[in-house]
Amino acid sequence: MGRLFGTDGVRGVANADLTAELALGLSVAAAHVLAEAGTFEGHRPTAVVGRDPRASGEFLEAAVVAGLASAGVDVMRVGVLPTPAVAFLTGALGADLGVMLSASHNAMPDNGIKFFARGGHKLADELEDRIEAVYDQHRTGEPWDRPTGAGVGRIADYHEGFDQYVAHLLSVLPNRLDGLRIVLDEAHGAASGVSPAAFEQAGAEVVTIGATPDGLNINDGCGSTHLEMLKAAVVEHGADLGIAHDGDADRCLAVDHTGAEVDGDQILAVLALAMREAGTLRGDTVVATVMSNLGFKLAMEREGLQLVQTAVGDRYVLESMKEHGYALGGEQSGHVIVLDHATTGDGTLTGLMLAARVAETGRPLADLAGVMERLPQVLINVKDVDKTRVKTSAELGSAVADAERRLGSTGRVLLRPSGTEPLVRVMVEAADIEQARSVAGELADVVKSALG
Image (cartoon, rainbow, N blue to C red; front, side, top):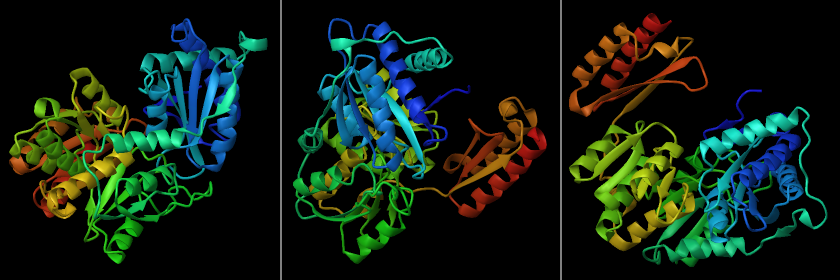
């Protein structure tokens, strides 16, 4: 069996890779591992379970709930809510475990399982590894130690989670959104209810699209991975801005009043300046990944802010933030973490805070986002090469050094071996798109010759 847990839980095609049996088994294993770790010591354990609207989430939720209850865990079933809402409720309700069923921005046939520890934080890597090992051990025949009688878990629907999460979002908003017209694209996903409710209660005039989930249409031509509908709707309705979420609403991208995209780097830049002004940007530092646009780095330097860069993945951003006590971090893709108010990326919270900055300053989003200039970025995937030699090839190292000299301070080169495929990603940024394309093409040829 290959490793089940990836960087964001267990994910695969529902009922093919991710079956009811797997969901049940992992849930039982998680309960046993947390019990062994002492998480349940001295009290009856509880778990919060939520999902996005995918049709497969219905049977997978049933399997997870059955597994937890069979292991003696009481379950609060919160229904369709965003991933950050499940994380928040896990902490707010004092639960020992949170479980979210979602495949985020993936197409509808996929689904996933993500576990949260007490407090709503991502489960530690070593606990995920232990859950996988225990699951595999029992999958091959060793019987579980099962409670009976009053020891089995009880299951209840927790309908208050919706209002509790919305109230939390509104409580941390720095100012109201009165006077703003905002288009929300909910990707027919988990935030289709809570996001419009939060924006409306904050005072905005809201137009929604992609907010009628039927279990089959999640992320289908809408949401943060398909911004075309949102761009058109913002212009059509004369809106001040648009906000797009993905299927589980842990990310947010935006559109200004002209229909131009505002990506995660620009959102981070806007929020960083707002938080510094409010005195909440600890250490005057923002955390981002190495894939953030060079324009973001240059803007932060110009504004006198520090930038800490991590490996690609919001989990690495979060690890750095928690280790050093930073308050703001995120990715170009729209995963933005405001650690004082959320333990994970929260697309609804991010959108609310971005809109609050527009309302507070009276400046259009296009003007605020102009704090940084996105430099042209070219990405080429070079396939069927020995990715393990990226750092050791002298020929490649010489070519990269030469390219960096030519690009100077307004350009950048990044070579990234794929984590799952035999390919190397060549990324080049430059002040001029043609120069970026030229340098990227040349480096891609060297990767082929040196590593092929």
